[in-house]
Image 1 (cartoon, rainbow, N blue to C red):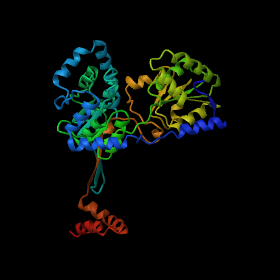
Image 2 (cartoon, rainbow, N blue to C red):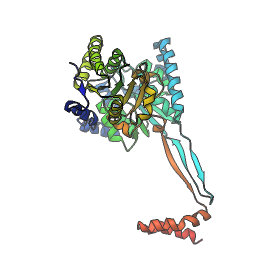
Image 3 (cartoon, rainbow, N blue to C red):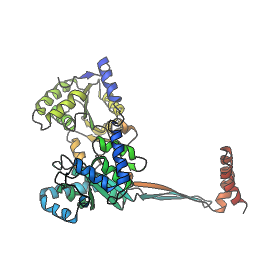
Image 4 (cartoon, rainbow, N blue to C red):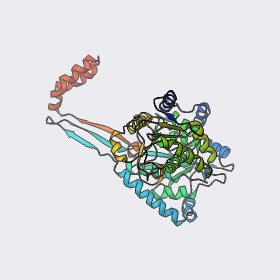
Length: 435
């Protein structure tokens, strides 16, 4: 049996639930030293190091002059994609743009009767770096990563959006990525991948500018590099394996549930697919469908290993219990495959994204619906949110006192400062009150 179902409340069920809830793992540090060495090389030798690593791991004939994607490459990319792709791209951009425009924050000011003015000034960062993985040397271009990271940065008003992506063996970049970038207004693209690309964005090189925010998915080297430069720059998040939890009742279609579990499992062998159902017969039906659908998948081996090692099926007494499990798990993708999914939305406290009803596959959110697909994993949805426009914004406080306002508040300010032993703080108020 590819997954052994367990019942909540039994010793086996509690053990499986415990593993699910305690799945948080620190970033894979097996490459920590190697990444630190790469980052130091990029920091000190800049373009030379980026080109050296690119030549070693991506394109044997790589040169410094090839780092920036040329205007000719950008123009020719349009000749290498078909009209159907352009049409789908246009629609996807429209959906993602429309959704994220609602996220934009406004500056605000609050005034008091004594003349005090306080407020918040919202401003975009100056530069954002977008890392886009190569996708099997360009054979599976991750167009959605370009859109999901680049569009919110543009809405935020980031002046300089810089995209980095590894070149193929021939030094090229997928035309689909180049077209997608241009369609959302990104024209500054560099051929660099892995940890050296992250280092270039964090430190800056002769060719690649230093940025303030770095976003985008990648392998363990990319993830570790982002972790190491975090604090010097903002990063989107340290993401773990992708995950889905499906809450299903007697109305769920086992074929659909199995398909959605497999859609998650095919990501990689560490991906997590979970079914929590209050309808016990569904468990066996889904298991049967998993076996039937697995054999026709291109990535059968990956999906099967994922389900065998990580897959979970939990049977609960009722829907309320199932929702409790979902909240405790704080999953990246939560599917409510139940009779009345909207009735349960008020009860959901923790999830990266919530997919409502039998006709809403996770894939819709990954590519086309509009909300961002960069989501918190490993239970961090309890405190973290999806990537959005706010990722590229920063806020400054505004404070303005007049003489009357300072007289009104002065004694209180000085009292608290002296209590903390900061007499110079108190004196900075006192000298003003003497005037």
